[in-house]
Length: 471
Image 1 (cartoon, helix red, strand yellow):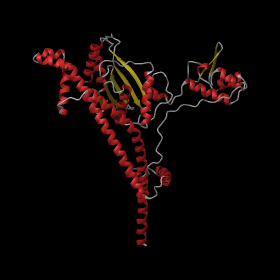
Image 2 (cartoon, rainbow, N blue to C red):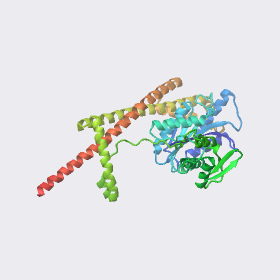
Image 3 (cartoon, rainbow, N blue to C red):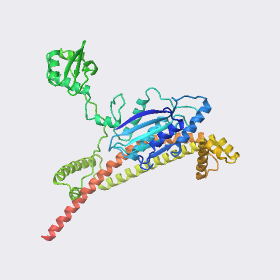
Image 4 (tube, rainbow, N blue to C red):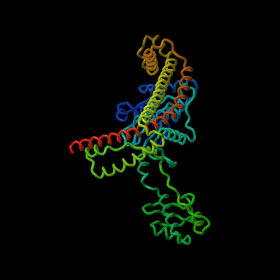
C-alpha cells in the first residue's frame, strides 16, 4: 500500500541555491537511514556529486535560455513514496522508486532515489533536477501532478503485486497519521452509520427519524433549513447536506415518504494482493520442537489437509499426476523465469551504463572550456576555487572514460536511441516475466508439497517394516 507526495524545492529561507540543494540531498542520503548508502540509487548523475551536477545543469539552462527567476525558482523536485509496514523489502522499495522516477520524468531528468529504513514503514525519497538533461527545458509542476504521481505509483505497485490505497482523501496527511486513522472511522462515516441504523428501524417520519438518532447518542440541531448532526465524542456538528449521496436531508425525506429505498454506502477498503492459491505444508514436528504447543499442532493439521486438497486439485486440473511430468514442468518454468530475469537484468545494467556514460559525455563537453582555461592558467588555485564544481565534474568524466578504456566517445544521440530500445524491450518482457514468476512459484510450491507427502509415506513404510521385524 503506497502513498505519495510531491514537493517543489525552492531556494527561500535565506539559503543560497547551492546550500538548498546540498541540504536536501544530504538529508535523503543520510547513511543511518539508507543502510550506509546501500539503498541509494542515481540516474544520469553520480550520487556523490549530484548536488554539483544539478547546479551545473541550472547554470547551463540559464546561459542557454537567459531565463532567471528569483527566490521562487524551483531547482529540484522532491517526491516521497511510502509503503505499508511489513509489505515490502527495502531493496524492492528502492527498485520501485527508481522505476517510478524513470517513468514519471520519462528519463529526461537526472535523479537520485534514497530508501529510508529508520521508520516502521519503508519509504523512498526521490529528488530530480528541475532542468532536463539537455539543459534547455525545465520540469513544470502541472495542475493535477499529485494525482498523476499517485496513479503512476499505484500502477507500478499493482504491476509488482503490492497493495494500493483506494479512494484516497483529497487532503494531505502524514503517513504515520494516515496509518493510525485507518482504524478510526471519520465523523461523517459515524453519522452515516447512525443514519443507516436509524432508517433500518423504519421510522414513520422525519421527527421519528431524528428521535432515533438522538437515542443512539447523536446531537441533533437546526441551522435555518439545514439539519445538523454531531456523533458522540465529536464537538463540531456536520450538516446532513455534507454527508454525500443517500444521506442528505432530501434523500432521507424521500426514503421516509417511500419514494426511494435506502442503500447503505459500502465502505472502501484498501486493495491487498491476493494470497497464493496453494501454500507450503507446515512441518508440524519441527514446529513442536521449536516450542509450539498442541493448539498450534491442531491448527497446522487442518491447514495441511486443506493445502493437500488444493495440491491434488491443481495436479488434476493441470494433468500433472505423473511425478516425472511435474518435475520436468517445474524445471522448465524455473529455467524460463531465470532466462527472462537475466534478460531484464542485462537490459537494466546496460541502461544504467548508458545513462551514466551519457551524463559523463555531456558533463565533459560542458566543462571542457573551463578545464582548458584552468590548464592554461597553470592549474591556478584561485581559478580552481572559482570553478571547482566544473573542474571536478570534468575530472570525474575523464576518469569514467579511462575506466571504460574508451578511445572514441560514442554519440549522445546513438546512446539515447539504444536506451529507448532497451526500455521498450524491458517493458515488453515484464508482463511475461511476472506470468513466468507466478507459474514457477505455484509449480515449486506444488512440487514441494508432493515431495513432503511422498517422504511422509516412505517414513510410514519404514516404520511398518520395523514393526513387522520386531513382531
